[in-house]
Length: 113
Image (cartoon, rainbow, N blue to C red; front, side, top):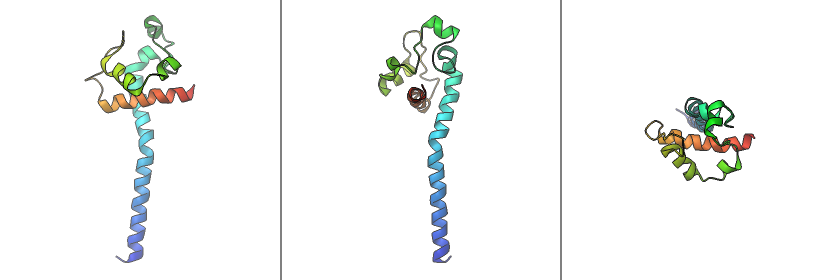
């Protein structure tokens, strides 16, 4: 292998690595959206406003709201992990990574309102 081929291989490897790492946040957000849809949307609604029959009955907060968004990541993680009020605990039902992704997903909701 000559020097030019070696450099080209290195550049291609670097490009593949960049593409991989750039796509990770989108993949994680897609996974978080799927988990949200499967586990959270029945009460919080697809749009996370809580404007669904179960959400209205339980008086769940709009996840876009300042009330939710002012909570720390640790507080949101604790609520998802251990439950809060009528919200069930997801410890053992979701992985730590999924819970972390749901917290990040909740943060993204504030940007979409």
